[in-house]
Image 1 (cartoon, helix red, strand yellow):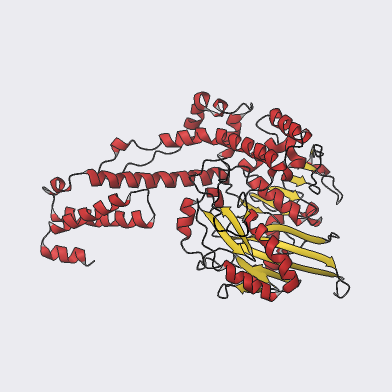
Image 2 (cartoon, rainbow, N blue to C red; image 1 turned 45 degrees about the horizontal axis):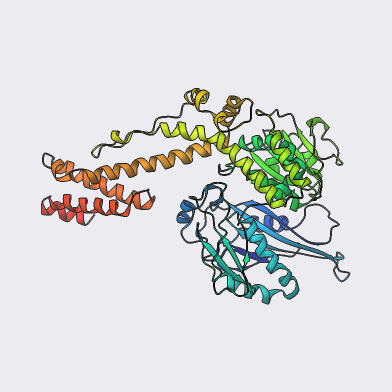
Length: 548
């Protein structure tokens, strides 16, 4: 087993360091044997690579063995405030790898090969890869003492708080980064104004915790960005065949970020090997491929995944002064040999037409030597506007299913949210469809019909329905607070009054446990109402209700 080290999650800051096959911190964190084996294989290139030097890549691992005690404090509070796309995972780990390979005649293999791995439940690829760039070179030179010092420093970091800028000291450097919040305007630039008082030396300011250089990742695929966005929207099974784990993981993460702020609700594996425990599940031909984007490097997958409907074969990502050579869309039947040329092997026909204006703008940017981050911003803005044009009609329709506020009365259960009827929604598109905000032409109706069958629609609908249900409960509590409770009690029996007490208590507990969007003042008033009602009852009942 090749040597690897892993950084594991700390009590406040959700990361874990693993090295030489053992956990450095925290000592009480436990991985199953299955997880340890998977992490070991995922920490190294799956196929022969003659390249020397340092490389970085990412993976995503399914948790095995059921739920475990969290080391992260209040997961719920973070997830409520964070964007949906950056919520903490409950069933998967993210792995961030720093791999070094150099010639060394003293080693049995003729090479020094070692990985330092950071594991977290957060998709903070930019932050954690930047952290590894600081830690790994020192670790390869100084080994254990370096990691022990790093662990002690990271143990003092604050937890990730959405909307706040964090100063994270490590190895003589202060990493400064802002954690995105759900209330941030989609597509807005990270806050530029950081508080740098008393920070010497000057901090290493990261512009984002998670965003990749989209232009670099998609450079050979720019003319097909429309097709790739549709494949992600519809949750189609996609294989990314790349020459290295770095390329495969970057493209997979770029693809799954295309839908922001809509959450990509399917599975995805930035880097996947033949040793993975799900290998048989994904390569079987007895059932349709799962809804997943998977990145691979081993040529063996060309044979085992031939039956998948969409295969993206790419080469190394190299930035140049000209428009990179664009891959072509090819028939799946041509994907047969190990030397298969780069291309998108699919029979998929897009619902929408290409945005030629976007390609022209990016091409002009290349000619003018526009910085890659500016090109990425253009690309990200285009994808954001495309997603928003698609999702806004859905948001308008689902908002119309909410009962009117005047229908919510204090002494009856709140009315139900009306069901989502696809055909009713389709009728709204003629006058309030995406054509109002998007210039792209095509079969928008057909795209919506396919979207309704995807896990992304199911995930979006469940989330919105949950939010609307909580809003209804909050409005009902407010209606109760505004009612005349004494007048209601005048002609009610003791049984009815006790029943009201129990129901109000249940609502109060639920409001606090589920963090309903209710002001604290409202909750306190409900508590006072409960005391008022109990005080009107005979002493024997008061005793019972005060001591449940």
